[in-house]
Amino acid sequence: MNREVSSELSQKHRLDYEGSKMGMWIFLFTELLFFGGLFLLYAVYRSKFLTGFQEAAVELDITLGTVNTLVLITSSLTMALSITAMKKGIPRQSAIFQILTILLGCAFLVVKYYEWSEKFSHGIWPGSPELVGQGKIIFFSLYFVMTGLHGLHVIIGLFMFAVILIWSVQNKINQKDIIKLENAGLYWHFVDIVWIYLFPLLYLIA
Image (cartoon, rainbow, N blue to C red):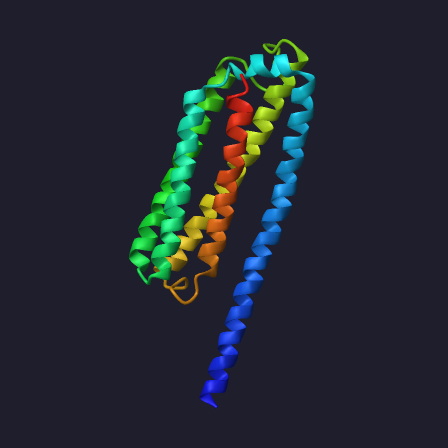
C-alpha cells in the first residue's frame, strides 16, 4: 500500500515538473515572438536607412555595451552554477550564486541607467530635435524601446530571483523540488540571449 502511494506521488511530481517546464517554454516562445517582431522591424528600417543607422550607432558607447554583455554572460553562469549546486544538495552554495546573479543583474541596470542618462544629457531621446535625419530618429526610437523592454525584463527577473532566494533559504526550493529555480534560470538565459542579439545590432552596426 505504501509503495503504491509513493509511486502515485512520484508520478504526480513528475507530471507537475513536466507541466511546469512546458509552461515556461510556452511563455518564453511568446516572448521570443514579441522580440522577434521588434528585430524584424529593426531589419526593415535598417535596410531602408542604413547610412542613418550607422551614423546614429556611432553615438553609442561600445565599451559600456561590451561591459554589460560580459556582466549578463557572467550572470547566466552564476545562475547555472546555482541550479547545479541545488541539484547536488548544497543549498547554501546555491543561495550564494543566486545572490551573485542578482548583484550582476543590478550592475547591468546601473550601467544601462548611466548610458541612458548620458544620452539624455546630450539631448538624445526619441523625437529629439538634436537628431537630424529620419534614419537617426528611427534608430534611437528603436534603441530606447528595445533596450527599455529588455531592461524591464531584467527588473522582472531580479524580483523573481529575490523570491526564489527567499524560498531557497526557507527550504521551499530544495534538491527534490527544484523546478521553480530551473524555470527562473530558463527565463534569465532568455534575457541574456536577447541582449546578445541586441548588442551587435545596436552597438556594432557602425
